[in-house]
Image (tube, rainbow, N blue to C red):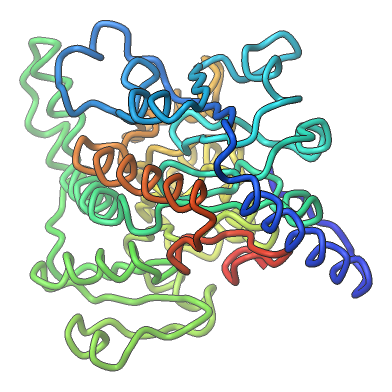
Length: 382
């Protein structure tokens, strides 16, 4: 997990220097056999149901044969937490660690300190906040992810969740399952999406694509971000920039969270921030669970200030059985699935393989994939 650290310019210079040295080391030692550890979720019987289901432990991104044919050691596990877990056994001598946002291995400063051979941290997907990025930078490690690999997957999922909440879909589905029939119990709080004001907090790749997907629904579209989107995209979508987040939140019928988890956004949606929203607001969050104050969201759902909350991100993950979001009224929560469709898995598996090939050859990665490089964090994490 990322933690806030104060660092002097001298320390930053030292970090950058160590990062360069580390990069030089793996360039010069590229032909050597490497120990690569992957942490993924276990699929059990589902692993054999689709040959393209590569994102699980059993199928290991589809790169085992390729890695082992080149003399590398590839260890894959889902056991990632606690002093006796499988991951802990390999921390002292692994060279590369591949993790995912869907079953995150929390790469703490303490783990980084003990990983004496570690050079490269790869995220199979998007979002590397399960890694202490400052500690990685100070240790001279390279952190990279497969940027863009599941943008379409997450944006489509967000659109689905908006419609599920607006149309009050889940109670109707549960009626069918339970053998009931009560139209009034659904329709008293079901609406059209057309004409509603939808605001995205964050307009990066996913946020921009969501705005494009929402355009045909004739919504009033707003966005808040550090940087404005292009004038061309603003014209195409009709989306209006809101410089002040609280002002935007007060206008929205639906709020979609699309900002990365950083020290600035951690716990951002607390009781005070939620109070700035309309009573009866609907919230969709496929970004990161820790952006929300867990109990504040639960309390607002119980009070009715939040009329519906949907997302697939929790903190921690997997979510414990007593997590309060499991028991909120009018929630449409799922496990972390939006970015791990089969299509997305094939994209992020291919991206991981491409970066490993480049790593073995001592070549640079695509620039947009870097999260930590030569002691510097990508701009979205600063």
